[in-house]
Image 1 (cartoon, rainbow, N blue to C red):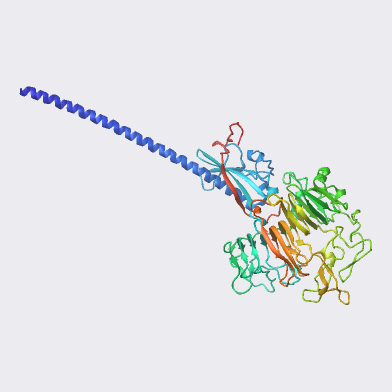
Image 2: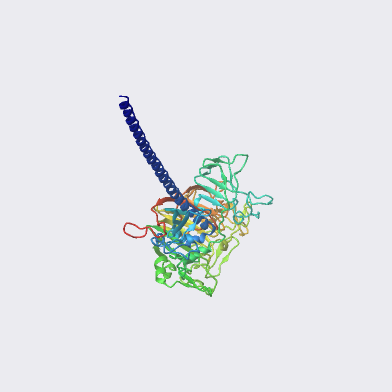
Length: 624
């Protein structure tokens, strides 16, 4: 009995040892499975983390590439002409380039990428679309960033920080001494130690600035002056015209900004009329010579009178400097008007220049220039003081033959106009005339008016005169630029009804407006700029109180220009900023000496390249 119990116990103990071993084996297997799962999860997480990091770094590399291109543009405005003509993004838009500047970021295939500074695993390349640069001032760039196995692309629109970004821009906040008649010293208001400095022109208490304004100087304002937009100047303090209050800043406090330089000359804009520079001037505009009148007719048409013009598109011999007519004169005539029509009394009626520029130059004196006259004069214009001896009397009136009325060939000065030379000064009882100083018969002056439809810029080596309102037919699509080297001036001629006893001058009481009456308004729509002068109202201090001078666009000038006096003459101002100028510009408009380029729009797009540098393809097999 005892033996059987012992045997049973031994069998039971053996069974328990077997069960324990099985339990250990099972537990160990489970533990191994758990460890393996944890390792797999950990490895997968590490891979995903690396992938996420590469994904983020690829976009960071693209942003770095965009910043690199912006920097190069800011250092060299001409960098917009560099790129890779073979890049898909560039060829699709018809962009043209002068070279690639040896920049590896312009690579459009293969394993070469530009490296992000300070990184060993982030790379970029970019492609440029400059097709709209000359017509709208806008560049498009597609930037691709790469990191590890991730590639991402973005497309951005870039626009320079130019004068048209502001409703109102000035270099100096004083008037031109040539207009004020002062012998003051030209200097900024913030400069110290300047004696006899030209006096600042102040904003009146009734002035409301509905847009951003900027100056290289500092503004002076009354307490009630209202600034609804940003105010940017040399420092943070707008000077008060009196007391301590200097305006109501509803658009934010004034902020200091760097110098933004107006080019001394706009003559480089005439290069846009050359036919021998296809890489930089793929679509030449029109060159007119001497006094030129442009009347906009609405409906995308205009009539141009330019009696001194002989060639409206040119080419220049790089060795001799000889200026000849462009090879395709028929094409030039189609765009700019035939020479016969331009020199006729009826003028040339043509479409407004499509996204292009018209430049009006002085009559050249060089004998190897196709537009010179070498002492001769336009045969089809006899009514001009260029073709006869004209004596300008001390009283400001012109004396000449009865069949040769005093005129520059385009009707300026007008019949009966007394040209105010202002040489007698503002406080004297009389003023003398000075006709040749106001209207030249050979200067590149332009006289414009009428309803405008289209997109173009008119630039002048002399003065642009607004002889009447210039308005947009469609303010959502039409855009016009007016760039006068010496001035952009509202035409406002005078007459003299009472001369001094010696007939040497006109009595101040006898000076009156010739063309305008009390309350008359004028509107100018467009981006206005004057390199060396100002935007102002001719004879702003003569006659009755006029109506409103309305500008819809922007104004950039070297000096502050007067349009009225506190004594009740001239126009009231209503300047309204055209918000479209923040993202687009008139064709081939004036650019600052140097500027920075900002992003106006930006969006991520499908990757343009694969990791190995080959182009990414569409479902149809074409490169994106």
